[in-house]
Every structure is written in C-alpha cells, then in structure tokens.
Length: 281
Image (cartoon, rainbow, N blue to C red; front, side, top):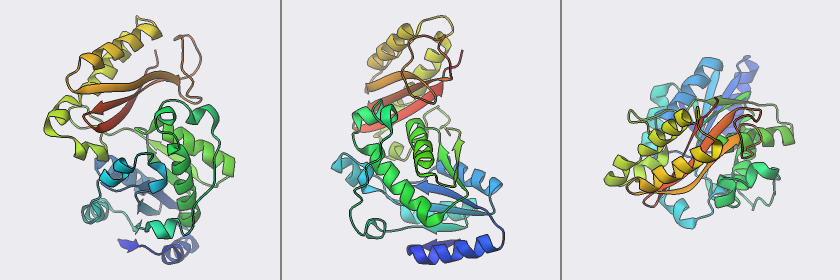
C-alpha cells in the first residue's frame, strides 16, 4: 500500500493504473476508521482494479469549532487497517493542500439541504460538496463508495455529481452495525461508557417503529419515537423524520409513492449520533 500527501504524485500513479486498463474505486473518509469504512474498501476491491482511500478531516463541513477540534484522529491505526483490508493507495492531504485559498463556492441543493441535517447543521453540506468535489477532481475515480448511514449526505453527493456532470458512479453501501445494533461511527469512540451502553436503544426504537408502521399512522409512529427516546436514559432527540428516499420530503401518509426512510439524530451526552432505517410497508 502506498501513502501520498502530494496530489501530483498520486495522480501520476493513478494515470499509470488507467493506462493498464484498471478502473479506480474511491473511498473518501475523515479517518478514525472502523469496520463500516473497511466494508466500503472491501466492496471497492470487489468492483474495481485499484482502490484509493483518502483521510482528511475537512474543516469546511464543521459548523461547530469544538466538534472539529474533538473529532478523533487516529492516522497510524487507520493506515494499518487500510493496508490489512487490501487498500492500494491512500491520499492524506493537509488543509493547505486541499485549500490553498478559500473555497467560496456555494452549492444549491434546494430542499435536500434544508431538512434534517441541513436544518441543524447550517453550511455542513456545502462543505461536504466542496471537499468531495475537490477529491473527485484529484482522484478522478470511476466509482466512489459511501455508507448509507449518512443517508442525506448520499443524496447531496448524488445531486452534486449530477449538477457538475462528473463522470463518477456513486455506490451506496449498507450500514454496518455493532453486535448490539449501534450504527458504526467514528463518533462512537467519543462516547463515555454509560452513554455507549445506552446508545443501542436508538436502533431498537427505530426497529420497533418500523414494526409499528404496519398498523399505525405516520403521525403515531413519529409520536412513538419521540416518546421512546424521551424515556430512554441519557438520550436526547434532535429530530426524527419519515421521508421519501429521493426527495427527502417528509411524508404524511404511508400511501404516498416512493421508498420511506426513517432518519434520526440523537445526542448521547455531548456526542451526536445519526441513524436511519428503510420503513417500506
């Protein structure tokens, strides 16, 4: 496995790979890797001739400076995990490399960026679009692999690729969970023991809500989740929404067309956790 911090060097290596007829699979990450990230690398390896991962904690997508400062950084362990998983190339740029000058681009995603995460984290998705578009430009992948845990982010990236007419296929990958159901996340490392013990209730409540949806209205299911999280020790609900998969518009009835997804954000102490579950009836 080769590690690069210089864009020109990794681009030269990738050009040589393309000249050999190999397609490029890309897994962008912010480090603090876990099995969820590694599953993306694994899938990229199954579908592509060369697998590239990036590790970069992008400052423009954090609307809370403390969140940026506290984000876990475990580069040495990350590189070891990527090598063991069979990753071919890793790009580890600095902030100065990615932003030699301020990126003042403003992306417009309409309602996709104003609901749920966009509502509570203003500017977050513009920062995501900035960094992912820059990484796509540097790596020029044939396919890019993203986890479905960040469901809204996936919709934003698909919209960005369409807007910019980028020649990359976005491949959604299933959520990977801990044995107790908690969605794997780099932020899980920040949970104090008592909050980590309580956090799996998020998935339990989502699963019970999905079952409840077979016989109850959208409003009743939303009330159930609100009450259950409220009753859960140490958890605080930020939002729970039932939305249509593509538009992310909140649904009012199960009879509406499209795939329905339940999306949730919960604070476990100071750590913000997100999850989602498909609710098709």
